Length: 501
Image (cartoon, rainbow, N blue to C red; front, side, top):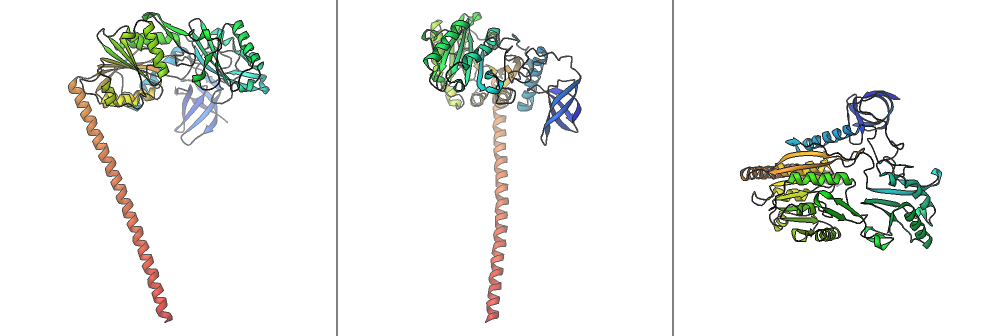
């Protein structure tokens, strides 16, 4: 049965949020300000999930989705919402997360970084499935909240020429020897190059190779093959090994990479993001700068063009080796240094071992930089970078790490804003700037944090002691009851024996 609901706000899965009898209802397909009829599809004790049946009063921000597969395909969640409103919702989510997780508000909200709304996705992983009921081979993203592959015939967030490959890829894979053993195709676009990585679970036949070569010649793509893990990826044509690059003209850089390397999905936004990060960091010619989670050197090399030395640290040696090769090729070898280390396990002594940095850039994966933030918070005023720029792909871990830097380390959250790296999705990329307090302020914050930690430890010890005392009291009472029971049984047995005598 349908209910009439008034939508108050939107979550990052693009579900409208309504309330009914004090209970939250997430309404798929509804937008803030709308009045809709909806049917509940899932009930939980604290919330419900419903789906729109009819929009009675549409939002002024509602637009017609451009893609015919929207609503089924899981690649996009917000195509029915005007793009600038999507960004405003992401900005609000970032600010709310700072407050709810870290009890923080940035002193200044940065203007959001915008880029292309369509055709922006230069990296994508397309799943392949053989589904006879749907005509054979499917190539595309998963259906929304499903392991099934969407029956995609076009995709508007992919560049047009890649979207146009979806149907030819279906036909090509169907013609190969074992289409059910080809689980995915990864797309990676560089400057003037479209690379496709074919994952194959069985060795390819000579005819399969001929099919791939013919497809490459007809559609102007380069095939790479992946028989096992990512380290087995290799080009079908060996001369293509160094063909993939992306450029950052502002810094005079051309960055080579492999199709399975991590690079930003949206090249236009990446250029704008690097430019903004360096402006916010305000590197001076005499500065020594750290780039943590540096990857291929996406920030390290631009930093090296501005400062005295840029030190990149990353967990993958393959990436740091290629980053150094790129630096040397650009004549930046003497101004860069790279180290391979698991940054999820570092401590303050390791950080001290790297030496003093005037400024630091942190660009972690979704897990954030918890260990790095804790190490930074323990540095003395004389040891610490004065300014930190943190680029994030997860507001929750950014807010957690910001809380450590501010409440334990004596940094100020000077500014923060969103980066619309993934239009039409709920992904929130962001950038934040931290500035160190003066020496007295840092020491005061660190001492207050130390006192809080001592008090928390004392509270935990007291709670554990109280729990242990209660457990001991309960055990003693139980033992006393047991002893009394045994005494009574013994007395009754003795009385019975005397009676028989």
